Length: 201
Image (cartoon, rainbow, N blue to C red; front, side, top):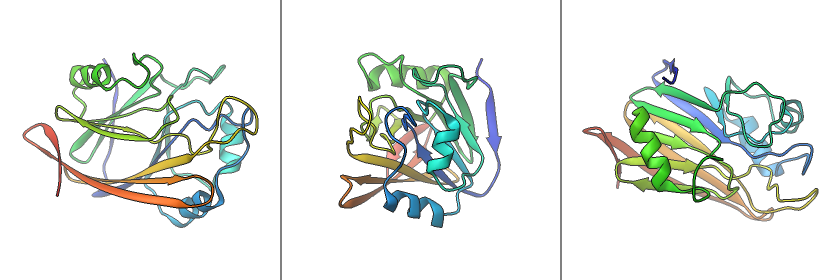
């Protein structure tokens, strides 16, 4: 049985990121991301794992709010849990790294997991590619890699992270994505109705 952590504030501003791979593959995030996070007041942060070393990750980011961190396949020696389940306002959120999803990043298997544990929103990482999927009443979010980490030191891919604004049973998903030159921001709004998640127009 998963533990449910209840966070009771009227409107939640949530930072979602992961796959930093610091300091083994990189030691920084895009300057534009640093400034955005620094200037925003978040209520909590959800971290999808593969930090590698938490101290190195925290050194590369502005001060963070209360963090829920899950264990990734590269987080050796850490005692993070493999999942966290939180009730945030009217929405139940499951956080995991995603190593167990087959195929890699597979939404059908993730959907089955979300149904089994009664979650409305699933957040995972592992693929380093940002995605926002609405599938059979469940919302699945991958924030990508906030550091643009690739397979080797100093390799660099697109970097991304997500902000959630949760109020009652509504959630605004804001994705920030950059090729290290231009930052693209996209927003989608979803709401829960009769037990399922829907896209709001």
